[in-house]
Length: 76
Image (cartoon, rainbow, N blue to C red; front, side):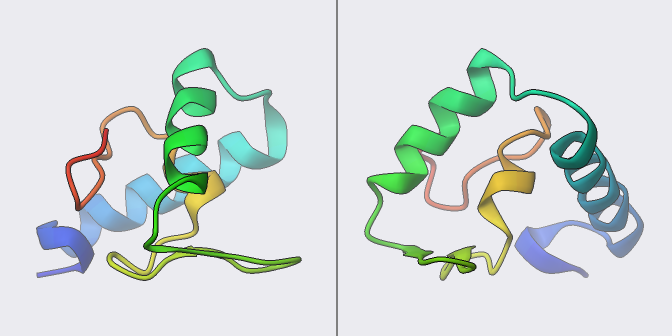
């Protein structure tokens, strides 16, 4: 079992999708909405290079771009 209760292959696919989107496209309105929620969450670890969720250990800017991903805390 992988991170966030997903199978490893699914998680790897989501990671690749998120990072590819982060590198090649502008965020969608849904990704922006999710990012705003994460920025206001007490579980984030924001800094110059640190944008990680302490609950799921995911890189937030990439995770918010994968529409099939969910917040471990149920925020989106």
